[in-house]
Image (cartoon, rainbow, N blue to C red; front, top):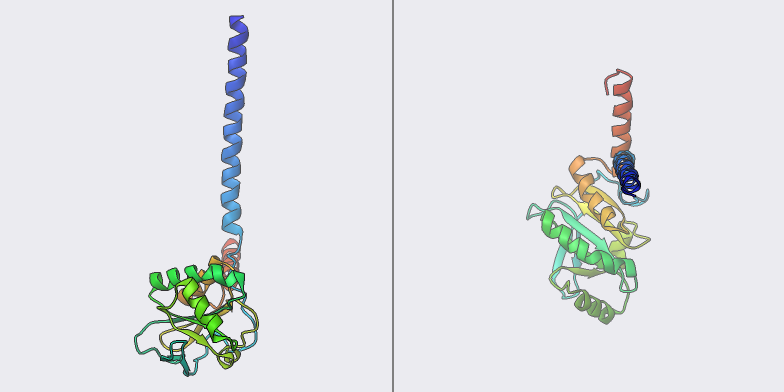
Length: 209
């Protein structure tokens, strides 16, 4: 009886060790795949102002009637993040806290933009999301100037007035990718990943990248 228990315990311990090794191997493989997967950046449309171009200053008024200018060199030395949204867009609602958090962390000037004639609906939307501290512009012409056709859409304008990045932003990662694109000087993270892959291939071939 004792021998049977010892044998069964040894078998169980062997199984535990094998399972632990399998888990470690899988965890390592997940890490390798994570490094190989290209980052998912915002989807950048081809129409509208191009990344790298200098933006023209646009004079606007927010819901509160305050005048503001978007585009061109910034007097306060900060980059400007403009997020186009709509009171009827559920994805837009989920991105608002992310935009606020990102703007605070990166010291960005944050501007919300939309269109439509029902200003009371926009005011209720601002109150509901608690974003009254940020400019909220209702202007169809402003959206058309950046070729905004789908929401949520965002552009990041550098302090020098140059358009650093833009695109459809459906997730937090998409929104953060705009900042990463500005830091790297590359329009999209997909382009960055392609350059890294080309550099790695060149290194493997023994050629200068």
